[in-house]
Image: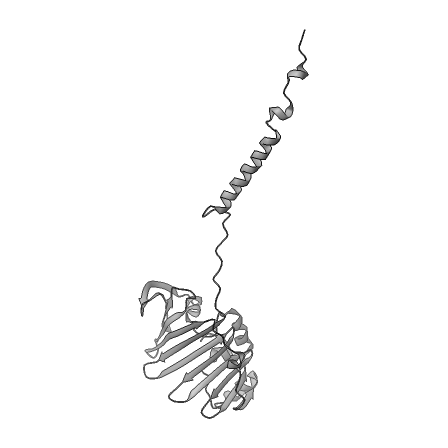
Length: 254
């Protein structure tokens, strides 16, 4: 007699090894593999490094030399706002950049010039980390290249340079975040003059009150719209305090 085939043939589940305990073991193994891949160094699942968080406020002291004239400048900035205290052969000149206003005043005379900034200058605020010490950004945009690694005053720095028909620009920038300039030097080919900015006393994320960027109430102010100032300054000097940062008033490169 022929044996009943339905009694000896393996069930479909048995032939595929698809028993419940095997399915559980397979799921656990898959989870272990996925966990290993996610935690493995250099794996595809590794998250990309986060960009460094830049300071919100900045301070630096600058010694400027042109070979025959010298200035000492103290800078503070918060976002696009800036205050610069510049000592020029005695008179202390204060420059304040706030929103669409460019303010310059002589603290000895107590007289101030308050001018509307050009739309181009205001627009450039959006692309800047800070309003001052932007020599490296300008140099790189113009096609400058890194030429070496060295040390300056004991600080590891990168040296960047651009040479063109106008002369030669060199910037020494710290290799440690937030990568600030230590020195900027410009050789002007036409006059054979060398301009040097030495930066020191860098400070970051300081508590700077908004009042530092406000015009004092005890100064005598002359105010101009931008077009009005351009028209008037084409005829004669305007105001008692000089425009020391024309790029922050008119736009363009420093």
